[in-house]
Amino acid sequence: MAARLDALIAGQGLTGSLLAYRMHSLGLEIRIADPGTEGSASRAAAGILSPFTGPRYQAPMRLAALLDEAERTYAELASVTGHRLFRPMPVWRLLQDDGERERIARRHADHPDLIPAQPVPGREAPAGTRAPLGAVPMRGGGHVDLGRLLDGLRGWFRDRGLLIEERLGPGTVALPSGEPARWHGATAQHVIFCEGAGAFTNPWWQSLPWRRSRGETLTLRCERPGDLPQAVVTGGESLVPLGGDRYRLGATYERGDEVGGPTAEAREKLLAALPRLLESPPAVRVEAGHAGLRPGSRPGPPFIGLHPEDPRIGIVNGFGSRGTLLAPWYTRRLADHLASGAPLPREADVRQRTDLQ
Ligand SMILES: Cc1cc2nc3c(=O)[nH]c(=O)nc-3n(C[C@H](O)[C@H](O)[C@H](O)COP(=O)(O)OP(=O)(O)OC[C@H]3O[C@@H](n4cnc5c(N)ncnc54)[C@H](O)[C@@H]3O)c2cc1C
Image (spheres, rainbow, N blue to C red):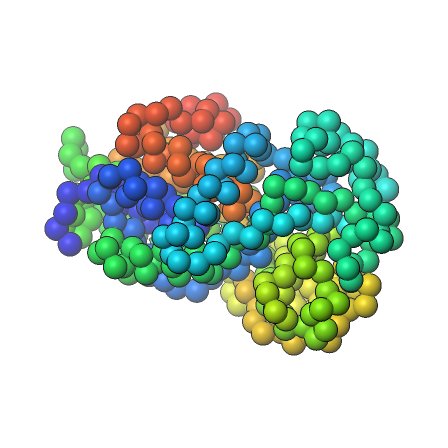
């Protein structure tokens, strides 16, 4: 590969795919490297895009802009890949304790268009769900088909000669003084690492305050799909309709930075959640188990930008369990920064953040 590039991007998970697509659309010369091995977070993810998460109904900053960018990006990529990638639908939170009512009211005060002031009675929740304490529909979210997105964009990059089916080891990048970075005969103004959990061992980025969490999901085939909810339902674990009799059930959270394969413990734990989510759980067949490491940021905001000691090296990472919502907006910010010098958001920029010094 002899090329003069604006950027080499390491990693074709959700983050690297969106960054590479966006930079290419802005007319920048890029290549994206990924060996395509198993175990990425994006392949393990349930694909839920929700404005609020967990029993605390946590919301990221810039929520309205994030939702808007996500919807526009997935629609644009649907026309690029020829597949519908985002299905907007309410995400129904099934209340697990009465304390949630107060948090719902608080979120409503900030986002009245996304969440009602109070939960509705369980009988108004989607058919088949079990919600004795009530349920609350959260608008603006839905499901992203991450498998299709990754496969579709991988083919799109390959057809354009932009994909390198190899690992881009940080130690194999040469950084001659005052010149662009060099890798495999190519020169690049920037090498941007979108490695997910791979960053935990990247000498440039391993000292960032990572939150390391391992997780698993299951793809299920369910009997009586007609009696099951046709919306995302969540209450501790979550159930996502994939169409027909297929559902995704997730996710477990464990500490750890070894991904390994799917485990019997996680499968048991996830299946045990069905009676909590469903009035009358159907017989199910586990079609596949999926395991991955969530690359999260301990302080909260993700990590993006150029290394304080060498601006040829960059990063986009740390989306934790919210990649579907955060990645479209933050990758666009870095693409715009590299294309035209647009400022990066302060809360995420690894050069400006005082919490990383
Ligand atoms: C079990 C589970 C469930 C989840 N559920 C959801 C959910 O419902 N909704 C949601 O929004 N988020 C969810 N997440 C989180 C979401 O998966 C992540 O936020 C997001 O996918 C991270 O994408 P990424 O591209 O940064 O990392 P990854 O998807 O891990 O991708 C990194 C890629 O880089 C490659 N790579 C690594 N190092 C190199 C290198 N040096 N050179 C080349 N390639 C390299 C890897 O092979 C991989 O393909 C879940 C995560 C897990 C684990």
